[in-house]
View 1 (cartoon, rainbow, N blue to C red):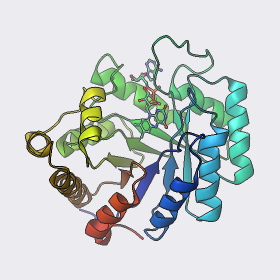
View 2: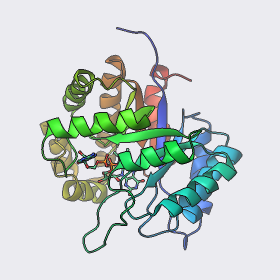
View 3: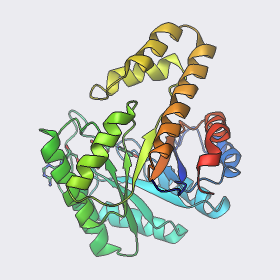
Length: 284
Ligand code: FAD
């Protein structure tokens, strides 16, 4: 086994523009001393203008806080022209790393025709802005739309071959499923780093949302028992959810994971607590 330390990175989401960026900027400043390997900023092109939300926040993280930044770019509701405009806006602020996504299909909302899969977007970025580094998303337990795991891995291989330098996973709670996925990737010839996405579940609303939206994600008995037992005990639920995430991370780094990507939910306390408990394992 290698003795190398993996990197720790964070994900944040931009607030509704009507709310403004003050709060998230304060949160990000509090995260700055944890020196994350990178911070990625999500995007919702259905609801908001990406330049006003994702690009603006990415600019702050990269230029004001001097932290390497990845901007998410879901393309199914964008035209080629809109993608080019967003890449130009990112170029202007110096952010040259993009998490290239298809994006979720919303019922009753007709996708634009330019990008059907993330691979189409990656090919377009490679053509239009080859100086951008491209990261892809992956799903250890399979993407919900895929017919089966074999076709899912074949599609992932196409995506990686189109030009991804690394992958970030969907959240998962059963590390064995992640290790199994890593093995399937290796067998399929996918050899780029895979960063494990970890989301600490810290309150009842978050747990309920998770149960509603992530049907295909396996919840181990130990995890379900925490949700059942502490559903109405916020302090204990938070402590147990944090301990569960820390336990997952310790196991992942022990098994030489390429990186851990923390879904912070814009909560700097969570990032600090996870960091306090695990920082000796990570590459600074
Ligand atoms: P794709 O890689 O295109 O895959 C989508 C489906 O199509 C899969 O089932 C795949 O097997 C299949 N497929 C792919 N290529 C082919 C092909 N050539 N032929 C046939 N089938 C194919 N969403 C947002 O809106 N904003 C965000 O900021 C955001 N951030 C995310 C971050 C991470 C780390 C992850 C894991 C997801 C994120 N998402 C985000 C959600 C993501 O947009 C959805 O999961 C979406 O449904 C799939 O996007 P994708 O890029 O993984 O799709």
